[in-house]
Amino acid sequence: MSNPIPRTQMRKALVDKGFELVDRDHEFYYFYHKGKKTVARTKISRGSAYDHYDDRLLGKMKTQLHLSTLQQVRNLLECPMSKDEYIAELMKKNLLDG
Image (cartoon, rainbow, N blue to C red; front, side, top):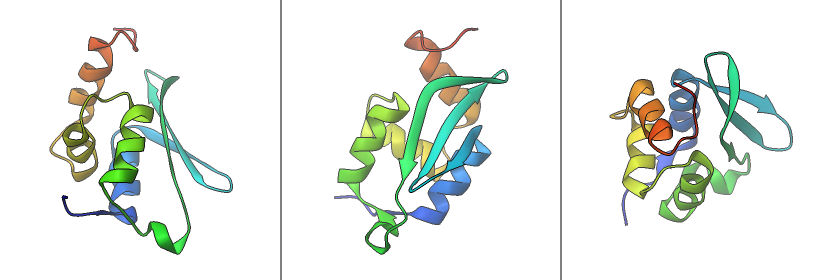
């Protein structure tokens, strides 16, 4: 099992890559591309049990973010994957307009 990712790091990475926060009972992040809300979104829980996200929780985020592998989720949140690379992944799946 890989190292858990701190919630604070995840928040920053998502916002830096074009996600916008909608704050409710949980933190919902929606990905915007060319000013439009897309199908890509995820949520981050606030509870103290969720200070770090392990592979199990990152696996849930994988589906929400429309990524194919857990490593891609880690790359998005730990920053090796750029915003442009994320857009390219979504375009490969025909989830974004060019």
